[in-house]
Image 1 (spheres, rainbow, N blue to C red):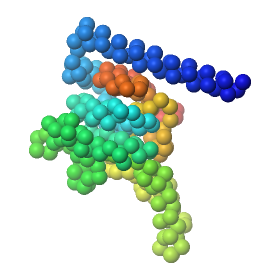
Image 2: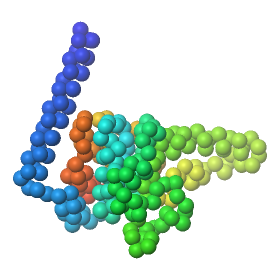
Image 3: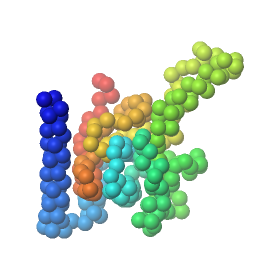
Image 4: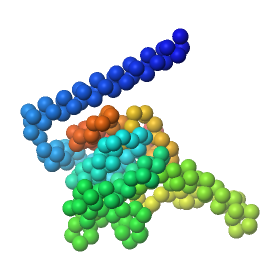
Amino acid sequence: MKQTLLILAHLLRRLYFAICNVSIVVYRWFTKFWYRTTEFDVLVRTLAKINNMPEHLMIVLGSVNDESVLDCVRIIRWCITLNIRYISFFDYYGFFNKINLKEEFARKQPDLIEHIIWYPSTKAQLSQNKIIGSKPKINVLLLSDVNSQGKILTLTQALAEDVSSGNLNPEEITEELITEKLQITEMPDPELALIYGYVHSTHGVLPWHTRTTEFLMLPMYANVSLSVKDFTCLLERYCKCEQRYGE
């Protein structure tokens, strides 16, 4: 009986996503046919509406499909237009081990390569107000487990070795020291994180890098590409959020 209920629940879930896929495709087709709104028009309207665009946007890759790499390319393109200075892709499950996003972006958007600085990069390149050669730049980071739980393990081993060798006093291991050592880059912590997947989970992102981060789910359905309207609607939701910082 229990197994039958699980199978039924699984089939209902698949049916739900199938209906969502069809609905979103039909909706996008009709809105495109009726309004003829271009991607640039949507982004310009969003810029006019939002007065607190996130400085650092993180994309948490919880699952991938055939459209994932193209969605990542689109997101970078939209961030360039919206003047979002930092964008990071947190890839806990190793998607970028199979796909070279930098090469895919160069192939799909060769005209925008000069607008991007890819991480890792030199400290001189990571500026507070990035303009090089009169062209605005954004910093794109590709993060993985090495930058989260893997970094914790590496730091723990390093501190233990320093203590055992006498190079570090255990009393010197403070919250400030750990925070400094675990800092991913000189970039600010992300104000907004968009979860690319079906499960509302941070997928291993370190909590102290996202203490004040707003987490929202990207609307994602199988074999349906992410639309600019989906993306900008989430930016507008973020704009309306009120940060209380635990108060």
